[in-house]
Picture: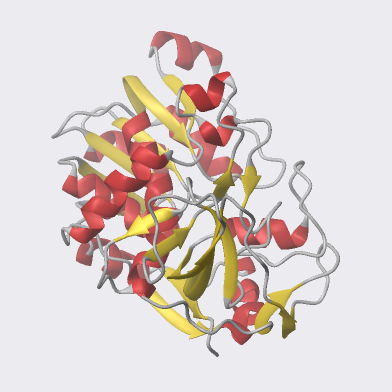
Length: 351
């Protein structure tokens, strides 16, 4: 396939200071380094991490100015001279982890996300809220030809993240998993992965719209925190003793701590969501007597990505998305801040 014509400028959303104006404007098209792909981004999911990158409220500093976004799905239009196993026209995904040293102990064990030199899309590396973006050829996700790029975009972060979290819970088919924050961008995919993996799913979230979505996605028991007075007691009741695994994708510190109380003896609490400054508080007596484990689950590695995409390709997981123009990103962030989003927003970079 001949190389497509690549413009010198493009539309993107950029900000120049933490919490500053999100400017939809013409910016230069980046040039790929020797190890990078240049991807014509068609769609990008909007993740809560993008909000933190913009606000600058995490202890990890983001580059400035910054083009955010790390759930980009598009087409390879150029590549560096050292790139192997890719060709022009391939479908490719931009993930949170854009690159790592590949030589440290963490990279050697396939824990590249823990590398001290990790390069992060939409955080330390300009990301997918633009029409053309670069990605490390080793870490970029291979997307099968013919895939709906709008649907697959959220899988590249939200999907991989919750799939890895479920693996970290060490569950067996038939056991209970409780998802706190069940119907947001992460939770809506976690419900489906958990069901596909044979687990029984309890979801905690609020409102009739989210309750409806939960059932449509295959969840078994929905607990509305706006109506239920004692969440812990209700989870213990419906699971007959507690959830074998709890997946915390909510951004509520209180909800995270509650998950340690309704976790079943010998169960696992998995921390995924990272509200700024939050702590997970676990009563030591309860923790010891019930012998529970609390683990953190970051993003998945390349194998996790391949496996998560395979669930999607086989039709076992679908992205409940709403598509909006890239120029609407400030409004999407505002809705995210207000907790008004059900499912996942995906932005069309052509608008």
